Length: 121
Image (cartoon, rainbow, N blue to C red; front, side):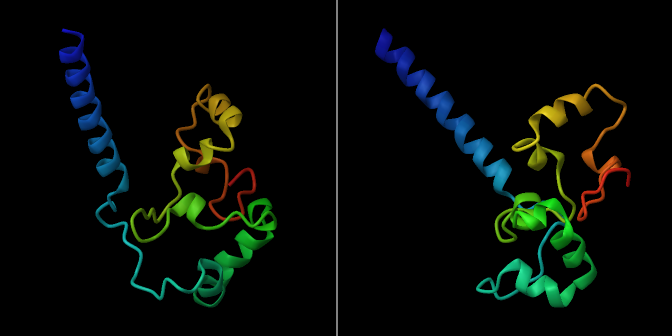
């Protein structure tokens, strides 16, 4: 009897695990990074392609600490977000995220610029 429950539990857990992994790793429609040479770093390419955005990031606290593009945007191949997602901020800023949920703001980016991350957008 215990073995039967264990098998049922394992099967359900496996389905949840596979579904959750597949759901979280799909590139969202419209969120696709252009094909590039993945041997080149994000910074190396964006320094030339989008210099104003690169400079805003580089001069920000995240840039000073060398927090890479993938932290907000994903790896570009399997996961890519054109615009950063609040969930990506919560890994390091859980206290601030909890405080934000008490306000009327729906997103971190209502107050913070996406690349400079300066307060009061």
